[in-house]
Image 1: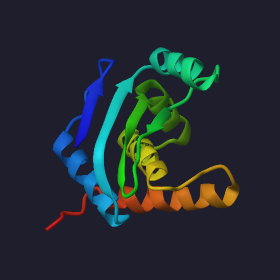
Image 2: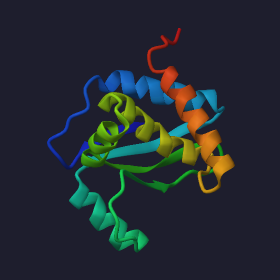
Image 3: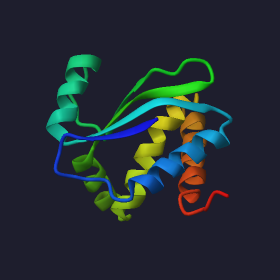
Image 4: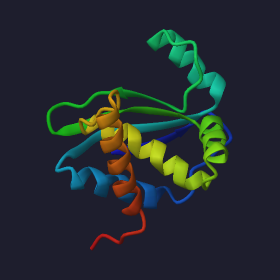
Length: 140
């Protein structure tokens, strides 16, 4: 089950399309979805979580808490809409594209992908692009 929660004015449009896309992305990794919660928030909200739970006094676009068990992925994905907007502007890309990248980034971590080394980062970026390209593909 995929749930969308809001701690800011932002509202995700076309939640059914995002829900379907995320399920197809997880299916493509031969995994199952347990409970996956997206919490959309602002910088202050996410900063507090970063300090309290991770001991990091920095702003970030995403924090994910992984509850994956075996082949069933799950977790809480906190996303700062302010950071995503700023990142999109800095990268000169569309907000929705950057939002998809951040949303699927958390899921890819749950699927076992890392991003600490340059090789891991390259594979993560490749997987993000692959999954983003699946967004408009109709599943039959």
